[in-house]
Length: 117
Image (cartoon, rainbow, N blue to C red):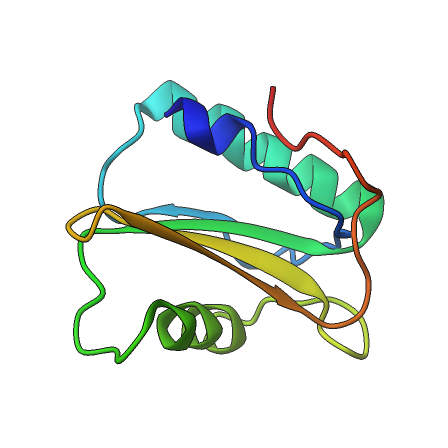
């Protein structure tokens, strides 16, 4: 999906070796896209020491809001680097046709950083 490829903002990245930074639960991406995007997320996370996470899901489920879902996915997923557990998560809700971005911690990527090309 092309819109995933331009996921950029002013935030910083960090590394979390044990967790996948890309979860395509809605099955929106091809195998090749998943591999390419996952590698890019890892590369950016390591370079900037700030977790960058993308999650696609079919529906918001029982959550009251996109924010509640994103916060739960990030915090309970073990993401975030450093003392403040810095990072960002982009969640795409397929059924609702919505996307949500939530930032955590204090660090940010340099302004204009393109995560995916």
